[in-house]
Length: 460
Image (tube, rainbow, N blue to C red; front, side, top):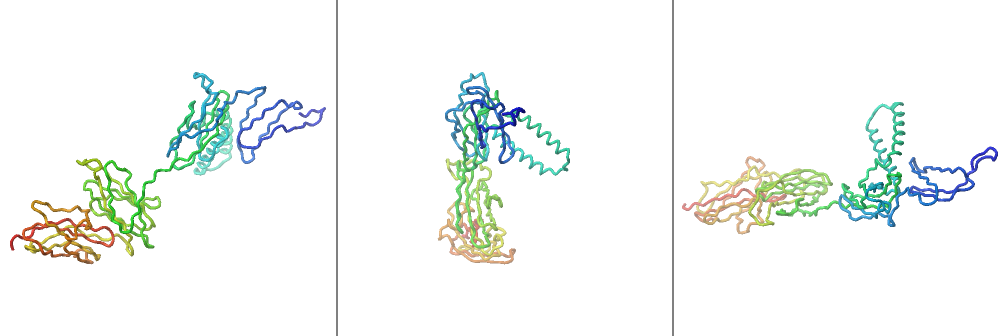
């Protein structure tokens, strides 16, 4: 009752109350004693916005779109970067002829929660935009005066009025239209998203909210990682038509120093292998591995991820489908009490002395290192017209024990004088032999010297 001077002060009677963050509807007959109705809205937590609609008269207003009997949003498919949604079509939309289009579906996506109505969604978007603006303002260090504050306040009020007039134009809908199926793409793998669908009546400026859903995108496919055992010699092959992502291995060096040595050698003469070393998601180094032995020093991490992949393209070969395209030999070992990679010989050439060549023996010489290492010499008799030569990546494990003729330790601290020799006897006169020398090391794969072919004298 309003205040009237001859009746006394005004009085209020509470008709309806509601507390929440969704949508509330009050419907009832006229309250006979009252002539003034008061609607009070009060935010309980923080500043917010609300939209209201008043309809007088009996029967439905028809101002709000109608939802189907099942108002839930359903998930048709979930991928690594996309989600497909579907929902029941609204009867408000299906009743209209195709020429009239006053309704639109709007699909919104966020990472926090579902929204009960479009007003709440708009408010959430507005607050996120305000947070972004505050971050940008903090980045810009400018002098604060009274005029900018008043100017900002004025434009905020102007923007608020503009938003009320164009309340549906600034919505960032991932899908908009009359179709009841939507595929949301460009999502982040292994992330939970919330999806809401709203049916907007552009004629009356109203909307209806479906019951939203959420989905977790699939995580990225993790490649199989093979652990490398201490000192294990492993062959890695790449075949035509195989995986393009390469091969992954892990290695954990022993000892408190957490240091190790990775040695690799490619067995393909026309293609290189790229090796990438990383630890805890950070790339440490990257190398191209060819026929020459590659030594990679590992230090400072408890474990390492080793990624091998083909680098470049090789020339076409006359081979059947599935033939070997590239191969690499690899070994990882813990390096106790070492500060760096082992030294290598200055040259891998083998020299034979013609003056010391006889009918049943020859003398070979090669360069060694300043570290004490074992050198083994292998020989193989060549047939008539047969050419010598052994693949650089083939180690002594591929040779027969009958071909090994001598093994000796050698060490010379002066690299310029690190030359050792071996006299190979028991040979046949006038016969060609192929000799191979292998440097057997405590760490890393054996190093093969270039093959040397020598023919003994026919007459002595």
